[in-house]
Length: 417
Image 1 (tube, rainbow, N blue to C red):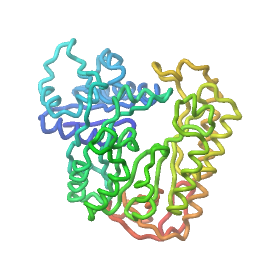
Image 2: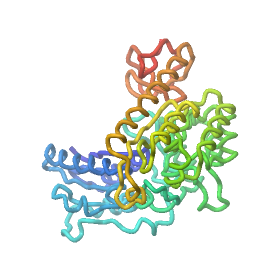
Image 3: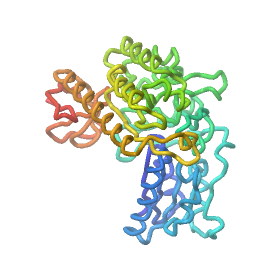
Image 4: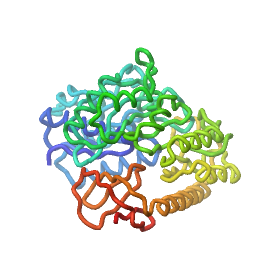
């Protein structure tokens, strides 16, 4: 079996899973399954525990190592599981020496957990990998951690405070990935619009984007993962307007469309800020496609407040919606606020998803007849510059970028001519 990694959660976890797998292979570990967890919701932790039990049943000879954000914030939850051989923190999991020390797993019960204070970590090093197995796009970590304390979020306690990868190291990593065949690179992190605040000269995300495009001319497509629009800097907006290799797709961390809920979430933007940002970007780049995270049923949310979240889908021209039914995360301020009834939360999440499906349908219809460059991900699926899925009626080589005319859609995906 060798080394297997099961990844939950964000793109940063996907990148880190690749680095961990390589460390584990270089350390010569045998049959090991690494479970890289997410802690964004209590449900995510439950799913990780469920997956661990399933892995233990299906692969009784494998040793299970649990790491990631859920392991960082509640290590004992996993340490008490008899199926788990080792629990690693988010800082420890990225060190080659950690995996070398696990070669014989000769540890006592008291040493089962290796999780240190993530808040004491002051820097983030780039982890050099030459590609992403089974993927046509590569993720590059440029930042980790978060200095903000949204009332619903426990991630800062799993990732620590914000820290950035030096610009030169990011450029070198992207060059390596392109040299090994990656056609598209995605910049990822926990709060990437806070990039650079801890680096000399405090460069911003826009400076990093421009530097990459300038110093790596062979990079064909650059994409940015989730951003906090209120922190978008002038250089980033200039790059959006003028750099065609920067893909016209932004995923926004909106979370809600009502000002009172945004304040109770401790977000730093208001409804009008989100709408103004999307309007500005659309003027700069008319083909821009927006995605967004929105939470349904946040504590104290009334039906009127929720309606404003529904309406912001159209007002911000959102296309790719990630809907999260609110679930209280122990240890967060939102868990102590007056909760919305579970039935109402589920109903609001359903209505938000329906609004998102309608927005996607509208976008798909508008794409028919357009000429798009599609990066092929699997034999018959690829994505446009705007991150919309395209299906081919034939098998195509993964990694190819093909100019296609959009012939139609099936309600969920575009269809190539």
